Image (cartoon, rainbow, N blue to C red; front, side, top):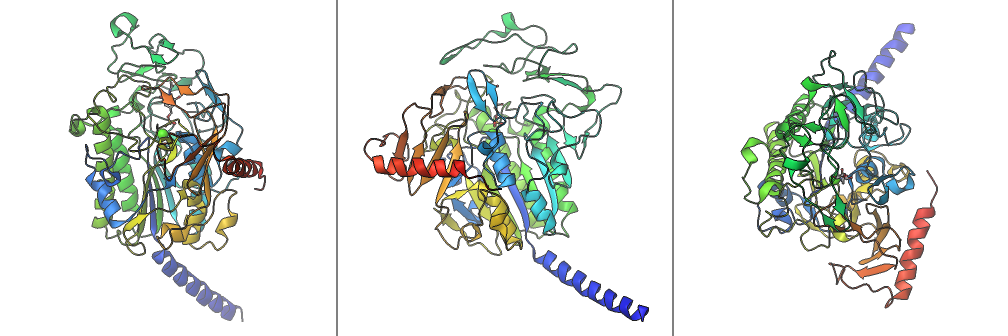
Length: 535
Ligand code: NG6
Ligand code: CA
């Protein structure tokens, strides 16, 4: 009798396993290529004429190119947070200051993990649906408890605690210490006899730094490194901030000492990350995988690899743009080689709009040669205007998506529910507060997208897009981010702003007084969204 039950159990187990395997094999691989600071006008597939991005263009030709897709913020941390959690970041209360700008949610280099480990995330959800889950690239969502992790031991509280089972990351940004890679829970290549120390307070150790630089309101003052330099020779001069630890000749934000053997080489970051992404795809070719691949390009400090130096003839900005495009080509080639192209969903997008001088005198602005990173949009990174949050967004899935263009309104906050639904979750709309299943939009089956999207700018001012209208809430926060060059109009104004972005995409004419009813409608809707409290 016992034997019989055992046999039946084996048969049932066998059938379940076979059917799971079958389902698993049908599940598409998912790669999200999340580019840093890439503008709406940076790609030839989005109309750039001074530069060619053939690999991303291939993706666009074979996939669905969205003209109306948004990141949830015009800065990094909140956009990434919303993509991974399906929740608007401004619902969180933790913010910091950058110079005279308050309520900024760019995580400092010693921020603890910004995602609560109890939260649903894309990685957790896909893992539950049968996926291997990996993250390669820039993290910038905090690590460890507040104050940062133990860099010399096991790095607890990181991607591994919110659903990722393979991790190869840069902890924050390349302009923030520590300048080391983390693989799973360890700093890569760390020599235990030379431990890392990090401080975002007082200087530590014998680190070389340079003196604080001056910024007059509205004008960034460049400086002469010969008179201001304290110690090391710098290969890249800061324009604002970025005057602390000098690593590889580049001054950064924050103090770091030790860990010499583990330091990354800036001109090899793109190559290293790309190789790690390719290795990950290779290792997981037999099972469905999710890869969150966050490039460091086009963020500062911009240090292209040898083969890209001067390649664009548009200065360092163009060079790292081409390097990013090469990265995408490598991924596409790998999928072709492994015959995974047909059933892999690639989503290609950016965390926020573009910026020229973002703290370094790297000639980005001066050498653009007519290229317009924001395309026809107003402003870029940090701003509430369209250039800050309307981003390139391309999805390719040869098996199920017809190539073309979509004008549907789409927000990255919906990726959680949408990917969950596409991989078998029948209750995807319930996963997170702000994320909804728009798989029919992603698949190009309908052009009727989201009804409205909310975005935040650098100082957490919110704006709402609905039916071709855009409302920016009034605020007394500073209008300009003077730490960039050209200085950025963040869209902060004491008066409410209302633009018809269908007819006035550049947001030139504030129609708040002309259309008071529309203004009221959007203002009320935004308040309603803000006041939602569920989950
Ligand atoms: C800002 C930095 C900027 C960049 C940005 C983060 C200053 C003056 N500016 O605070 O250089 O690091 O943070 O960019 O320090 S993001 O794309 O990761 O949001
Ligand atoms: Ca960014």
